[in-house]
Amino acid sequence: MGTRIALLGAGRTAAHLGLALAAVGQPVQVLGARDADKARPLAAALGLPVLSPAAAAAAADWVFLCVRDAAIEPLCAQLPWRASQLVLHCSGATELNALDAARLAGAAVAGFHPLQLMADPLPSSAEALRAFEGIRIGIEAESPWRTELDALALALGATPLHLQAGQRARYHAAANAAASALLAPLDLAARQAAQALSCSTEQAWEALAPLAEGTLRAARARGLAGALSGPLARGDAAVLAAHLQALQGRDAELYRSLMQALLPLAAQRLEPDALEPLIRVLDRAADPS
Ligand SMILES: NC(=O)c1ccc[n+]([C@@H]2O[C@H](COP(=O)([O-])OP(=O)(O)OC[C@H]3O[C@@H](n4cnc5c(N)ncnc54)[C@H](OP(=O)(O)O)[C@@H]3O)[C@@H](O)[C@H]2O)c1
Image (cartoon, rainbow, N blue to C red; front, top):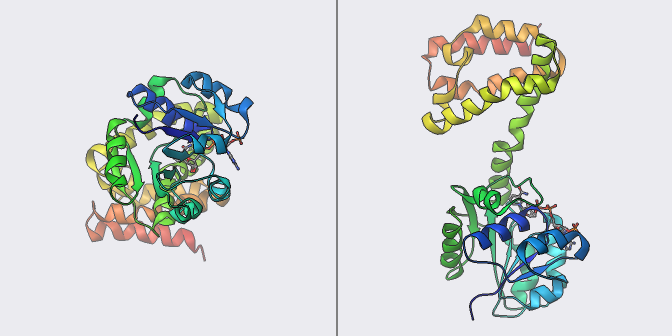
């Protein structure tokens, strides 16, 4: 009999992982959830019954705790572990010591963190598989589990990325900076464009979205400095000063901070004498006296 895999939790990560594993021919055999009614749609999609978390943990060899970060440690502490098991969580931020209860019972512990945004509560099989294609999966595990988890990541179409203990807060801050933090300048952009164009923020975002997508495509093709455009790429201090004058209040402050944060990338493109006027404009905006 092969390895029996259980998912505990029936949220977005469990849905993507479960459906993608089924799509690559490595289906999970067990689904556990604290609320059977809420888990029913995923259970139906996976063709599995919903067990209690304790029954699911007891019935599997590998057990993925796909629950929100704060629930990992207390849930792990309530479950009946045994020495032959591998107990995993899917969090980027939570250190593996949240799984100490399983370790104390003799089980092995590991982390398996898809570096991906999974927003859909119940994707189709194809969407779930697409979410893993070409991504990195952050893996923290000891040998021989690491080799097996690397193989699982590869089977999903992803590439393993080995995480170090003690580095998760920094790693997850980086992930958050590359994901949700992008929305702050996009929100500023949509509101300011809505004012300039006398339209709704939704219409403004529609107009701006291809620009944002083009920037990400350029950043992947040419690197971050290579994707820089606008006054910071051209050393155009007059246009930058006009931008700063047009904005007020918190948006002006955020825009200035964002432009300052881009100076190291601009420095990779511009000669020092072209960079200097940009720095002066940004410093002047910070200190209008
Ligand atoms: N979504 C993403 O983009 C993403 C990406 C990478 C990693 N992750 C990680 O994956 C993990 C799960 O995140 P998610 O986005 O899938 O969350 P989610 O969609 O909110 O689902 C969380 C699941 O955990 C269950 N749960 C919460 N507290 C529980 C408890 N005390 N006991 C048993 N079950 C409990 C919930 O059950 P109820 O419905 O009963 O509350 C729900 O089924 C987190 O560690 C997260 O950091 C998420």
